[in-house]
Image 1 (cartoon, rainbow, N blue to C red):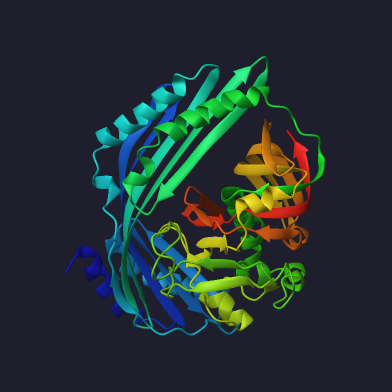
Image 2 (spheres, rainbow, N blue to C red):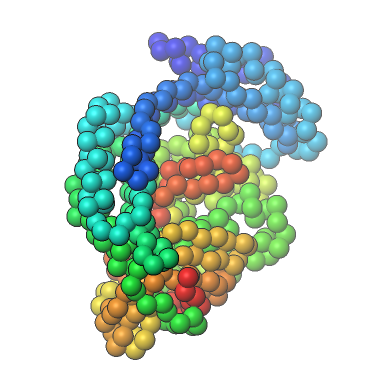
Length: 457
């Protein structure tokens, strides 16, 4: 029996000694490595390890949460978590019921942390050299990270779930300057532990560096309303940031205004529009067998044939809203309690080719990739990483980066073409309530949006 399993057995005994509506524990062993460059210089390189666990207790609707970096201290934290919960609890506890699970889920991928740091550094040195042989570059940033995590989840309902998972991220940025002009281009990738996903990128890295330089001489678009085509990366980011967060039920049930907007059955788009969140898709960075409350992963339709039909839940939000749990309670580590989070969020593919999507556009804009963005309730602003004019059904000249602004519900209704070319972007990390970056993925086919407001920057 491993040390984690020994502690887990002691905790189960402690659960039965304390009066609470519900108690759970998460035990975790984590190892990782990281490499970063700023400009030509190697900025940091190293390995990390951490071990710890947390206790969460529910009493009369109130939660207590305690974490510890020393697993041997965890059994003594159970009464502390229960007493915390008693202090804040003043109503009936509402947890959606689930069947207890006993399972062991192995990691399908090789642990990337076992690959020598020297091999990883050699690859990134090569990418940095490609960037820096490009003229007019001012600086660059490269960040690589990987980790392998083993967790044991137990609760007072007799669940006992062991899961292992690996994760890899790589982000590169090239910044070019000329005559007080500054432009940048980026590349962001990730995988569930497959190191091959970040190898063989020499051509993509060169294109990224060249694009930063080319943007210095690209024209700026005149602001206004356009027919806009989004590539799978930017469309995936749009559906994650602008709509996915509004589907997280801890936001919804605490906000009367949002609750009125996000009414199940409301029409938000054409019959061709289907938006899904699913941790059950194998092999993606947001995928898992069970969430951090021991709820099995599901496929949840948020929008089906243009209508709002679902939302994302923890056991508590599902209980309070009298809906089914969806397996979307996640925590970035044992130091945090699980909260409602997305997994793999995407627009399902339609039947239209990219050629047909742009074919009848006399003057429009094609946008790809992204820099960043912000949302406030139903309003959004996103910066596209690349932009091109569409003229008479053809992709034309490159533009300076543009900003897309609008109301998410109006924009969803203005989607009038959905491509047949779904792609999933694995390069993202999601932040919420101080927990960042959480491994997620998002995706979409190409989509066409009418009357989209565009500004240059």
